[in-house]
Length: 295
View (cartoon, rainbow, N blue to C red):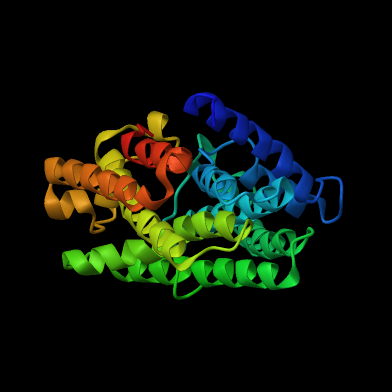
């Protein structure tokens, strides 16, 4: 924990390129186009917020390195698959992701659909490997499946699509984002924890409260950036929420109240980690990164 946060994060991000490369099928393996597109979707981009959370929580709970890497790779593959599908014409119909053409633009729609399907399967294959006890693996697989499914990320996306042009109440907006964005961020924290020593009830509650705060904060900041940053800075199309008439924190609360809410959630995340003391410094720093990021 002695390394500065920026150096630690850069090291984890670089390590994840190696880990993901190792756990993805090579482009030389049949079917070549699918494997090439999977690698295109996952490698060489992204902030790796979810793997960073896995690494931070894993270190907090003394998890072995291989278990941390597998959990981080799995959650990043699920995240990448969700972005590939989210960008497709039947969803948000976007052309830019992580500063390059979206998968369906670079390849085609059918390949993009298969890339998402294959990355989801690969995530569970990676998570099921390694040397952790079987009961620990089952708990981690169940956690990731729940976070990615209809009561998590996919359900949130369904609510999001249905909400276009609809005036949601603030609790409905929060619930949508707890599912769409928050569920996978929560899973990242818990997968890191479950990969290590037994999680006590008070520790589980602290992790849940922390994850709930950063999950909402992440989406509030996303809404702020969509309204204030440009596409070159974001690496994806800016202003698309307003263009698609989607409800956001900015459209509902205004810019300054949204900034204040993000800061309150950052403080809530810090407060949730009090039971861990200074040993949770990386998780605190990640809460700061999530709220203070510019892209």
